[in-house]
Image (tube, helix red, strand yellow):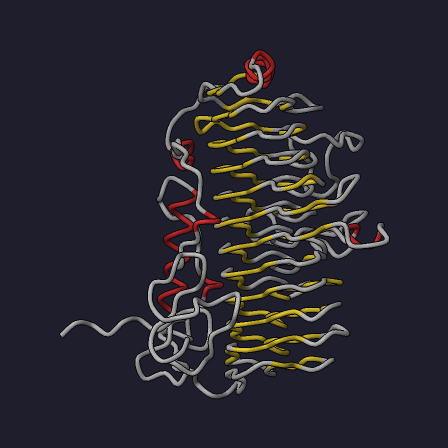
Amino acid sequence: MTRLPSLLVPAVAAAGLGAIFNGPVAPAPLAEAQALVDLAPAGAVVTLPRAVYAAPGRGGLRLERAITLDGSGSIIRGVGFDETHGPADAGDRSALVHIAASGVHLSNLVVERAPHRGVQVEGSGNLLQEVVCRDSWSTCIAVLGGADNALIHVEAHNSRHGSGIGFGPGDEGGRGHLVLRSVSHDNGRRPDGRKVPPVPGDPAGGGNSDGMGTGKACSDDFPANACVAYRFVENLVYRNADDGLDVTVWDAEVRGNVFWDNGPEGRRGVKMLRNGTALIAGNVAVWHDVGFEARFARPGRIVHNLALHASNRGIYGTGAATAEVVGNVVFLSGGGIRCAAGCTGGTNHDDPAADPGLADAALVPALWRYDYPAPTVQARWAALYERFRQAYRPQPSSPLIDAGAVVEGYHCPEPGTGDGECVEWRGAAPDLGPFEAPLPAPR
């Protein structure tokens, strides 16, 4: 996969989150962790003693200064909720971890059983890394307003009635947030895989449980779209009860992600609402009703994506603006590519019945599990992402090879390794689809 210097992951000594399941961890009241945080001045590095920190009925851990907090693989555990009736204290809207500052770096922590949100981030320039949030009643990780917050190698799953990772405009809108090489799955579902039952505010049961997304308030409550220039890069998003990614963002970038088996409510791999110019590039969407649905308000770009097993249509541009649609591959789907306002661009593989010659188009990722024994989110993500890359690369005889064209602002201008800021390609031209064919074996 292409390495981009602008997205390099900051170094962090991962504690091994998988290890917390393999041995005893001492219990402790959350007040002990809060006391350590409260004593730390801005700029300090705080390491929590490894423990299961039990939160009281109301409130959670609150960070109000720019510190680095290493959880050491600890768990912060809330009081939970009744699966049918919800939290016992319905008036408690606090998060188990609330970042109410700018410049916080939070790592190596598990947050679980939140009666509302698991992690809430406000402010700007915050970083979450090797953080797992699971089994919350509402959205697991919520970023509200601010600018340039980054979620790198985080995992969010089994939020009952919200998204795994969600963004809202806050009081003044949000700008420049990044979700990179993270995983969001099974939101809107119980741990046994069953979709959650309807409750007040969620009459469909998981009806708004996307893997990742933004609230519609990003545009609905403002005269102009208040969420600008968000990036979702190389994430794994699957088995969420609504859509994989559902965003209302001006100038969004959705690149190199893999979406599969999201639904049965929305059943879109990617759904973009009321967007300005947007780049949807190098993604994979498997087993949806529509692989990629873009409602562009201004001309956008849908380039070098792969849609497989889309029962309705692989790529659907439904907005009032035209879309540059080039280098995409649609296969084993009910319909190919359609743009309501017209598609522009070059060559696509747009015959859902014509075999594009992928290494393993019959792959059934819906049967896969994510619980690899690797001890970190980063290692588990890498193992699964590589399986997709190997399966969906063109075979040596594929008609996709050298059938594309260089897309300005996406591909490197020349073949070869490039400068790291662009997508590399080989041969006479880029291959169609998100992945290049492997180099021939040396003789």
